[in-house]
Length: 83
Image (cartoon, rainbow, N blue to C red; front, side, top):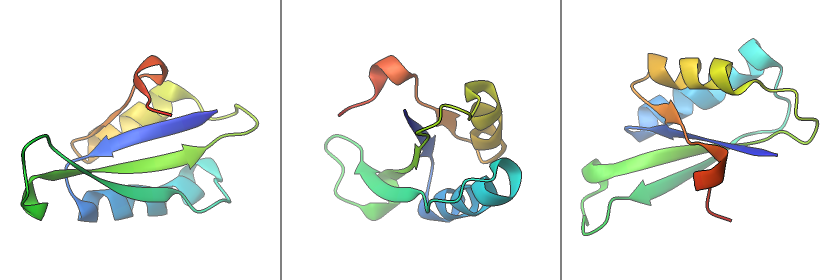
């Protein structure tokens, strides 16, 4: 299973990625991906995604969503995830 947390900027994404190991014991380094908003060229207008692989399915969506919310982000619903 893959979880995608959407954050407002790179700093928030990096902080969340750092928190995942301490709070949830995520051993594998999460992937950070810049997600430019449609029609926006400026890096300031980009959201950042933190992609977390959860092969064992042990991470709980409400807890991940709460972590993202602390940084003004959210957990993308699984049915909205793009390949």
